[in-house]
Image (cartoon, rainbow, N blue to C red):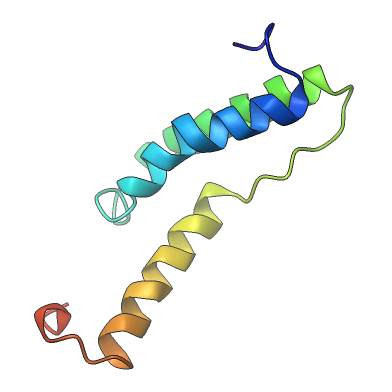
Length: 91
């Protein structure tokens, strides 16, 4: 798709098609070993490289996958601790 889209289009495509899948499964790989998390980080690094090549070195507006994992984990903690959701109390 890189030859069809500009930098902004590639960024939107990545967020919609690739990162959404990674975010959907973040709880599944949240406790994974660093070796596996590194493989996921390489996916984002490749996307950043492709987008930067397209827009002449301009850094894309992508948060790191680790940041997104941290936010997802904090969201669960907030839901359990503050909102007292009963079915998540075992966590």
